[in-house]
Image 1 (cartoon, rainbow, N blue to C red):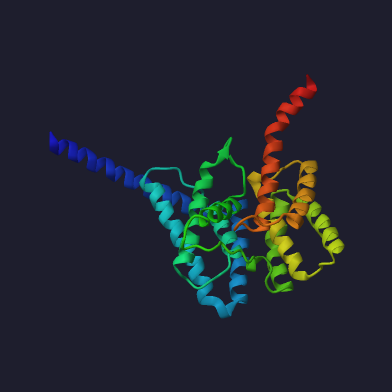
Image 2: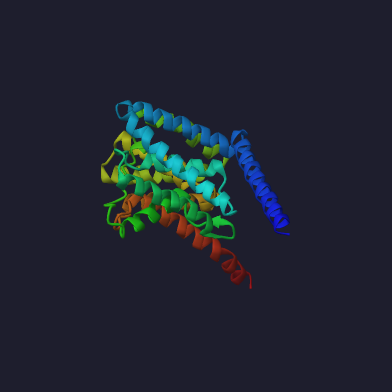
Length: 292
C-alpha cells in the first residue's frame, strides 16, 4: 500500500514538472512571436543596448546590474512555478525590467544594490496581485519603485533607491533618436497619439515658461511619455480622455515634488495612473446618474 502511495506521488511530481516545463516553453515561444507587445519589447531592447554602448566606460557595471535584475527575476519565476502560482507574461515583465534598468542609477555591485534589486523585483511580482478587474492600478515599473522606496525606509542597509534616469536622457540627440522608433511604434500601434501629442505640447509650454529648454530634457520627456505614461492597462483609450490624461500628466511631471525616498517623476506617473483609475471606476456610476 505504501509503495502504491509513493508511486502515485512520484507520478504526480513528474506530471507537475512536465507542466512547468510545458508552461515555460509556451512562454518562451510567445516571447519570440512578432506580436505588437513583443515588437515594442524588441525596440526597447534595441534602445537599451544603445544606452549601454554609449556608456561603454561603465560596461561591466551596466552588465552586472542588468544581469542581477534578470537573475532575481528568474529566481522569482522559479518560485512561482514551484508553488504553482500564476506567473506574469514574459514580454511585459521584461519591458518593466528594462524600464527599471534604464531609470535606476547603475552602481558598483554591493549588498545595498542587491537589496534594492531584490525589492524592485518583488515589487514587480507583487503588482500582479494588486489589480482591480484584472488590470493594474499603477504602471508595474512605477509600482516596483514605490514598493522598493517604502521598503528601503525600514531596512538598515539601504540608504535610498536612487533613480538617475540615466537611460532616459543620455547622449542628447543620439539617445533621442534611438528611443524615437519605440515611441512612434507605441503611439501608432497602441493608438496613444493623443496622449503623446497633448503631453509634448503641454510640457513644451511649461518648459518655455520655466526657461528650462535643454535637449536632454526633451529626451527624458520622450521616455516619460512614450515608455511609461502610455502603458496599455493604466492609461485611457478614448481620444478626449487621452488628451486630458496627457495634459494632466505633463503638469504632474513638471510640478510633483519627491516624497521620502521616492522620485518626483515616479510619483507623477503614479498620480496620473491613480487619477485615471478613479475616473474609470466612477465613470459608469456618473453616466448612470446622469441618465436617471
